[in-house]
Image (tube, rainbow over all chains, first blue to last red; front, side):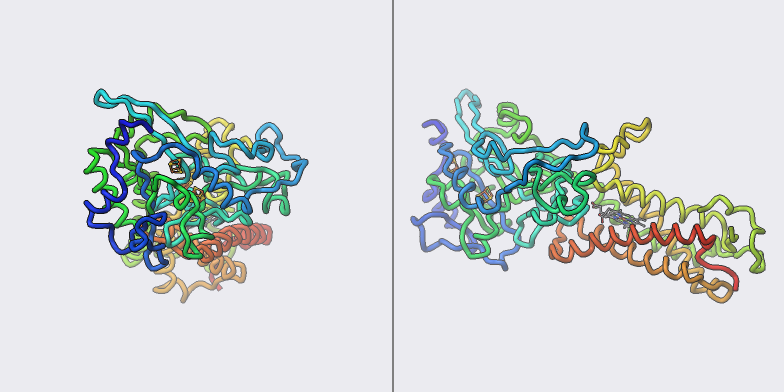
Length: 340
Length: 153
Ligand code: HEM
Ligand code: SF4
Ligand code: SF4
Ligand code: SF4
């Protein structure tokens, strides 16, 4: 964070004043404005977080807090890992000896910082981007999981159940940001057919559900000295993000991405600049525009409603109604001898 | 093999839809790449989860059409002339379960729909288990030469 982008940023207090202080469910971390402080309630429905990138100083407090808050959930794999077949394709992924690695997403690091220097409109910006699961509104990682291990909850959290996950990494494959990370040697697959199916458990940010359940803030939000993040009902967060972007002449990421996410970034520089500048690769997500990957399925779902109606209509029109005259005897008709 | 009294194209469409659903259904699990299925010439698409997913939807649409058509005929006319075999009745029940659980999965995948995770897990495992049971019963029916669901009594 440079002085320059501090100029662009708005202090939380000033910002809240201009907004007339967020709606009833708006959540302001840390002590300063205790009167407005309110932890989201289940009745608030889908919760979203707002990340004001003009404020983040890249101190890394959130990264450490995430690890501490979630340490009990981290995998303790059994070694040696079971042999997997075929060995050339089913390769174990092991992060258990690299638990301290914090430069990317791993099963032991669900949040990391991307740092970029970009020039925009002749000004230099040093931007830090906390990256973790976006908590999509219609998450493909959950929709496509064939075991029901990944699920979206009513409060907007997408969580992977470690006791059900087989570690096939399909969620990572279908996630537009390839967020979930695999650790081999743990989970349900060990009790089934470890050599033939599964390869561990997938891990990612679960938005500190255990804290939210207790009425507390996710660790990365409460620890941040700059109050970069705000959490609240999505509609309020969206309104706040738009107001903030307006105020700083900035840009928003997450409103439309993958059909809408419950993580909204607001930045003083365009996201395509950030995307070009960030270090991308395994465990280091991009910031590209993302179309809704479930859009075709959403359309096809309408067809699953129409199909039986069409079938019923065709039935009443007599399509294929006529039974063949085989008089109960066997082996006469030819037409269908090809069936199983 | 016992002949079926109902039109052959209905049978063929049904068997095609079921086979295609079983194949694309299995491919919902991440095994095409691991087991080199996507390596087979012409089958590289099996490793694309989105393609396989959309195909599963499309074959489900086909199946729903055929099943609705047959149900209408059955209720209007066929039930007076035909009788379900025991294995036929068993498969009708399994099929009903597959369709209900499958449609619930489609419902769950809609934007703005968030089902309780415990319910989703149940739907998911019911669908997967019924697929396996259906495979078993279909095989049994084939061996006993009773693959027709219904016959003239
Ligand atoms: C109208 C009928 C059906 C519909 C609407 C339907 C729909 C679905 C959906 C949405 C999924 C989940 C895929 C995902 O989102 O990850 C699925 C999975 C699957 N389907 Fe179907 N399906 C139908 C019938 C069948 C039939 C008849 C079979 C087999 C004979 C079958 C086999 C499977 C299998 C093996 C899976 C993967 C396991 C699972 O996710 O539970 N489906 N189906
Ligand atoms: S704790 Fe806050 S300021 Fe520090 S890196 Fe995280 S988001 Fe940025
Ligand atoms: S960002 Fe990826 S892992 Fe997170 S909810 Fe969306 S699809 Fe799932
Ligand atoms: S919400 Fe919790 S799990 Fe997610 S990044 Fe923040 S601290 Fe980590």
